[in-house]
Image (cartoon, rainbow, N blue to C red; front, top):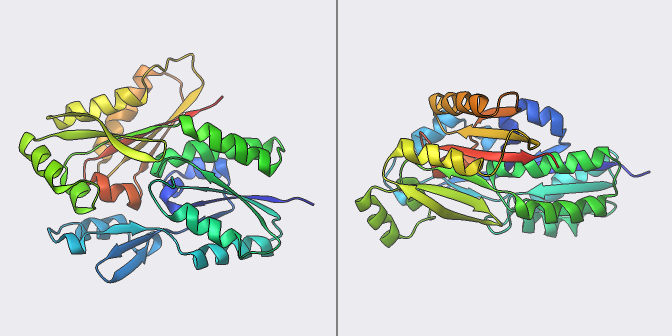
Length: 287
């Protein structure tokens, strides 16, 4: 008898949204790593306040960096799912263009006998992974075959996007996401970038020189071309900035009365890049 599991990683930030986590009903979550110098932690080993303390450094060698779970980590989790009676696993992960997580999962799937693993590239990171998890769970609840779910999900994820407002270029530079020349030029011009996550990449979509304007435009880009007649839900993430989250929660309620939304604290993976005051948005398309 077929028994299908839904599996993901902590880079999805699903743990930050209890209501969505209950809705998605993930059967397993693997931890990504945070490396600081010679030390290595998982998200469960380091809370957000400790992470913020560790980010207070100008030494790029000691800047927190994220890394994927090992093949052995995946084998351990997949074996556990098999021991629980699962025959198939839909394994949804951070974009392969952004992380080696999916490749670790791929290699691990070849080492576990008696378990069929179907990999799904969400094409995004952080809260941007959640819409794919919702889509996959919906298809699972409809009783669709795992290979069909995999095919549809991988295609569907190509249309997903997430947007983030970054208060300072410092974090992107220290984390290796921004080259020195672009960093110095951006700092000189006081740019506050709007990042677009799409198709396995994070790129600069727009920028202003005012943080509030950047945050407002980020919100507008996330909801561009959507009306109250469209069937969607909204996700708001903040990095050490509940005030910003409340601001855009209130704005969304005013702009789209009655629409479902979720507010959560950004997980470790995206918080390292956003820094305090950062906000991010994603849309769950319900069609």
